[in-house]
Image (cartoon, rainbow, N blue to C red; front, side, top):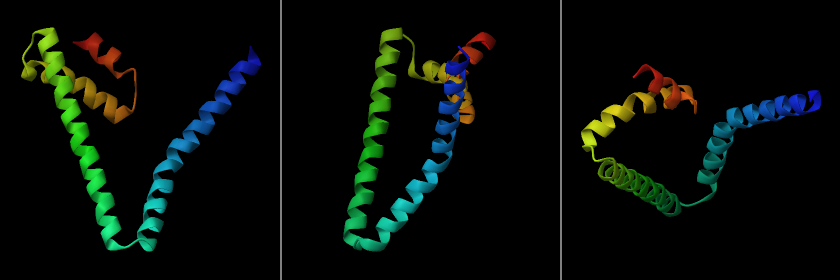
Length: 105
């Protein structure tokens, strides 16, 4: 049992390092990429990222509309109920946020 606990701690420590270093790695990779490709190719990449973002927003809206219809509540009410949980989850990066805000409501 102690070995499993120690392995769990080691894995958590490694994951913490990875999550802290990942943004730096991504920034350096994009910066390095920008030195070696032309402006036309860079513009194409930004268009791709913009299209991915637009698709994500559209998907989010479709999911919001679908949930609103299924739960038979207005979209405004659904957003008002979900907003505190979303803010807490984003600010704390915690998956326990929905449970904590549900207790206080």
